[in-house]
Image (cartoon, rainbow, N blue to C red; front, side, top):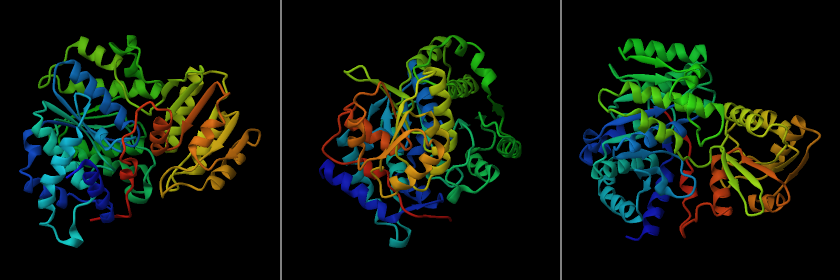
Length: 429
């Protein structure tokens, strides 16, 4: 099997859509020898900041000398981003091997109960990390938590970044309902650490923790001003990232008796953390500043707005905006459009993209004084910004991946892998 054929196999799994439930993943993992039983996990859920917190935890533990697996989604450019060991992406050869190994196992499932793309990838990751003899795996949920495929593991700690309105169609229409899905990763007697601050959400998390006798550590902005974080300069911009860092440190401290980490490793890990597409700052050869941020819901848009006001006070950027139609497009436009001098609306390279003309109407309502235009592609919009000193590209992580390719920050391969992020209708079990 070639790598291109392995990727094509993964594309083919999209026909099975996305399903909530642990039965398929548990069965597939059992057929694969239950590799999760050989591993230790920190399980991370939440509406925003999951990837950043995972990157911070990985960096701290790697600096402490541990061999750390990192499982995240979606990927920006390469499918291999989803599975990393000590921040080295899984090789094409290992992806091919895992696909070959898992194909016979899938034949044991009936056609109407075939594992989905994410269920298959979750078990591939478990096999890979077990084979790599990882000391620890930082394990990000896909969507929700309670019925997410990643929830078949027994973690050393459960981390819930925050709870905001997102994916309401699948997770529930209130903060309480969404919090219940996120709190589903809490296990009996296992520490849970959260930065959730909305009372409705925090009460659900606290109640679940009490029921399961799981020690709960809440984290707030006051914790960003305590050592060693009070003197660390984070590479990731924004106050929300300092809160993410405080959350990561609280998790490290909760696990210190089992996974010791020195203060120096904490400091070095946070000061060197890297995570693409989250307020990522790029300087072009012409001196232009380009900010890439996958703010795909209102709370993410608010965090981006606050970061721009903090780090670029008084500056009005050119905003390139593309959003998926299942997101709160009007609310995101209301938050971000008033910041812009000019606003270029583009489609996202996804069948789920919002129509640019719909975004344009929402943007004009939010900022009638801005210069607003729609473009057929991100490349056309980028060409129109060459004379602009500050450009912000945002609205979807899918768009950020395309921007990284166009800006040649990460060289793309010959196989299109961004489309692997697509998923179909969700059904509950």
